[in-house]
Length: 167
Image (tube, rainbow, N blue to C red; front, side):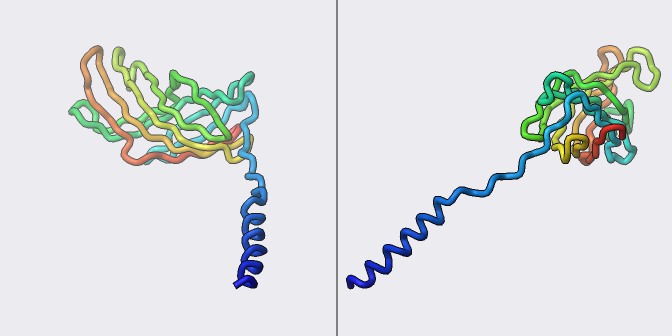
């Protein structure tokens, strides 16, 4: 029985040594360049424009203008689309990734005075390099004339977008 114990000890020590070996460092996520403005078209049935502006002093913050293309219910409008609607909130960029719930308002929709669109988006994406990012946009909108709700709209399928500097 003694020979088995001596053979088991080296195998146990080898397994422990291999298990404690340091792991290879993970690839560093690309960080956006401060002050960059990335633009692109969201791939909805009608391509709608979008921008992502990285803060010049704090590259972990960015602002966005987003697009919308959705089907509506409620009788007033059957389908609604818009581009470059400014989001109210800033979004945080962590390790090259961003996820944000954003809101925005567009006024005088369709050239009609007093008609507004209130938007809610979910934006999720990551930087592929310091000058480019990919993202997915989904969301809803409520169209109003004064205080009366005309239609409620929803993006049917989330739209993908590739954002690049000078795009």
